[in-house]
Image 1 (cartoon, rainbow, N blue to C red):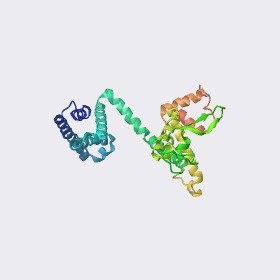
Image 2 (tube, rainbow, N blue to C red):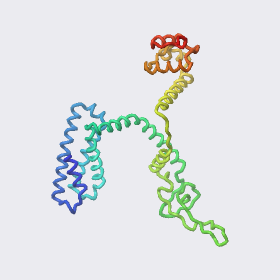
Image 3 (cartoon, one colour):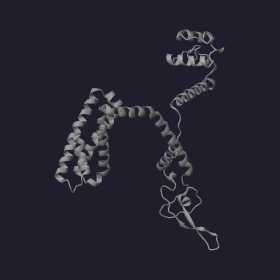
Image 4 (tube, one colour):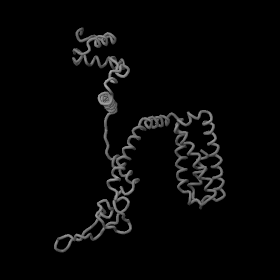
Length: 304
């Protein structure tokens, strides 16, 4: 708290209000307090380095301590205008670090647990989504990049359809006889946003905006079922097209008996529903059905 207060006071309060001597004292205090907090992280690393590395919050803590220390040292040696970006990010990390202290309070800790658990579950989705964005951005970058040199400051006339000057907004003059002059009367100068695929970085941003605008909603249970069906199709394709005939007969890969694990209560409930709907008395797997009826102590439809 003191670390946050010292550095935030220097970064936020105007130099017209705070004296230069007080400012230097607060910066020195920020450096000292930062090293004290950093020593705690070093002790954690020495105690269990593997556990420390596996926790993402520890890396965030190190950044939250080191960045303000580095910024304070530079601030004492140089002009404040040269370190405004560092000061801004230092305050951001310190504020978030202060927020993380609320994890120990049950009222707030529940929400932190939800955020962390959701983040761990969607990390694989984010990786796949990032690869999709990069792939589309790369493809459209190759497709829509201008083929001839051009300048934003001076109009460039050519037959390149991807030239920003050719796709910029233009206004034609309507003559007195109602016809339109073929030559543009006013042309709006193009910018980086006219053709965002001129640069690969802006093309990534363009594809991100495009793909995130397409939203799809589906129940979580259906997502799980869809995944299992997809996995079954992939395994069937591998077995049919990628394995040799002798490999398909390997019992270690394809056993005659496959064991499935299911929740007892849910299975009993499903069997009762099938009996009520008269879907249980079928010719398939009679021995298995008898065993299930016996194990679950369920009356068959013949006994009801």
